Image 1 (tube, rainbow, N blue to C red):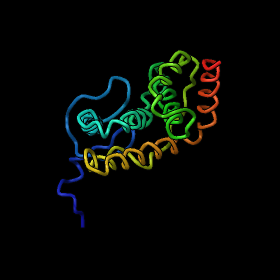
Image 2: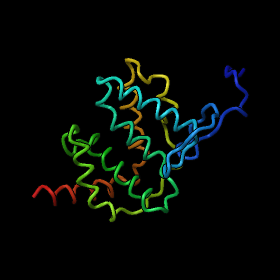
Image 3: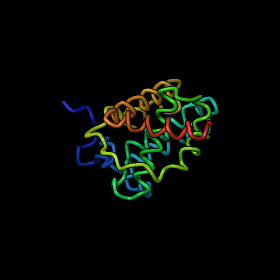
Length: 177
């Protein structure tokens, strides 16, 4: 028995992350390929983070997880650089390459080298998406849910970890001489 009150035809599959969400019309990101519903869930999550200072420590994790799960067409330079930079910042935060609260500065520093980033093949599927976090947005479980989502997104890209870690460390070493 299907407990979902809406027929399946009222749902859409996000072309970026694969999340199945109630279908709505609305805007999407200019180069991160997503469904309007997925993008709306993401912007709602961000609204909770912006309105509650206690949730801001997870903000960059939210941005990075969404970005790497919506890699765009894989051809445009902007989409390629976005995936690489957001994966690098996930590595900085989750692999403790550097102090996590400096991740914004590190992203700017690495951005100087974004032209070198290669196109990376995205995972076939993502083990956790915004659909799994949406119910916890703005609740006491928000931080845990977003952290788990970010870890999941990073792990789903495991095939490219060595490349991203080597690239980030090389450029962070250059600028820390």
